[in-house]
Length: 264
Image (cartoon, rainbow, N blue to C red; front, side, top):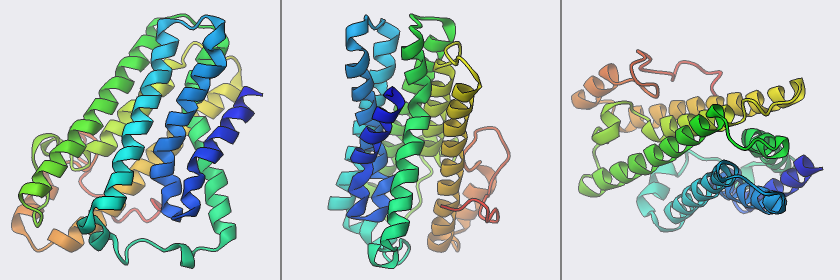
């Protein structure tokens, strides 16, 4: 029953995508994660939540609100972003209502699968444990990593809008915001270890994690293609992309644009 309630909440939160279908997986993504965190806090508030359990939910709320708000402000106020994305994103008029409904349902369910390890820990009554605290630490680290990466890119673009960003965390990997997401959602998965009672819960948790990993690598591929089009003739950019991993530090994976199976 709780899982079904979360699905309904997630669908309601990401229904903002009917205004612009890409919002299902951008602004709606952040809003859904925040709404799911709040809903779990409310559902389990009367059951004597531990500090760990409450913090897991609160990190989801803070992360979702920060991400959703950041993306919404970018959509509403950034003229340069709109010019850059013009012609690169399919408009609502090009996507049928049936396709939009399918994306909405898929996204809403995915967000619940992604947060399911926290739900399972809450349902199992786990009051602590090493895995829970390690997962929480990873979640906080990933969220902060993404905040810093976004701020560094914004600062670099304000100083030199025509140049690619290779400062700060962007010296470590070319997509540090996506790396932050991977760290956060790996933390969510780890936080539930010890609370997965049965194969179905393991499947749900791992499926949610695997899907967001796929989404992040797909996003990195789209970004690589856009940046190649914008900066491909710049020798400094060519040196940067040939020496800086695209998303995983210390892993010599410098390009994913040829991996056409990374779509979405």
